[in-house]
Structures are given as C-alpha cells and as structure tokens.
Image (cartoon, rainbow, N blue to C red; front, side, top):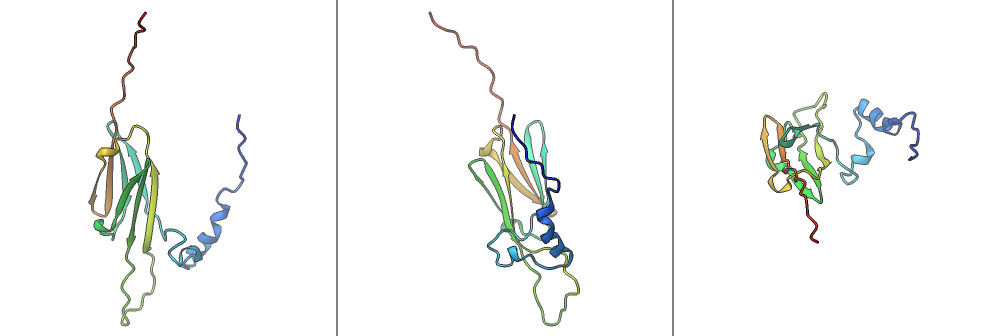
Length: 145
C-alpha cells in the first residue's frame, strides 16, 4: 500500500497567478518568455474505437505557426499567438485575449500508431488524429519434446 499525502487545498499554490490575472497583470514568471508558456490552449482528448483525437482551440493562430512534435512517446503542441499591433492612434481600453507562446504536452498510450499521426486545422481548431494500432492476438506456442 502506498502512502498518499493529504493536501486540503491542492490549488493554493496557484492563487498568486490567479490574483494577478484578476487584476489584468502579467505574471512575473512569464515576463521574460523563458520561464514557461504565457498561456495554454484548451484541448479536448477524445477516444474513438480506431483512434484518439486531440482538439485544440487556437483562434487567431496561423496553422503554419503551430509546431507538433513527437519525442519518446510525448506529443508536444507549441506555437505563438501574436500580440495586437500597437498604434499610436489606438488606445486599448481592455485586452482580454491572451497572446504569446503556448505549449501543451501529452503522453501517448502504447496503443498509439505514431507513424500515422496527422493534423488539420478548421475554424481555429487544430485536430490531431492518432490512430490506434491493431491489438496483438494471443498465440499458442507448442513445446517440442
């Protein structure tokens, strides 16, 4: 039996970033662009009989600017949404759409056919289709005398 540490408030360590977000202040951890992604797109993971599908909401992101890489069973979806162009004649009253780098990483199951993964974009949603490999059938092996 393994020991599981009790955490009464599991999201307590996120409250400083949430407070900064509430007051529309950029988190210091993301100002330099080196500490991590500025935002993470929402992604649905769906399983069908023959495939898995990731659906990432990326409105305003050019599909050519999206990088999808696979390394050692880890699928990484990364890219950047450009910030609105600044103009001296325009004064933004409120900016709610997040811009900057983003990155999401997913561990693929053993049944994923990594050789046949494909991706397409439609209406600001990236669809990544990951086919499943055929299940191996049990084989009876006879012992020679």
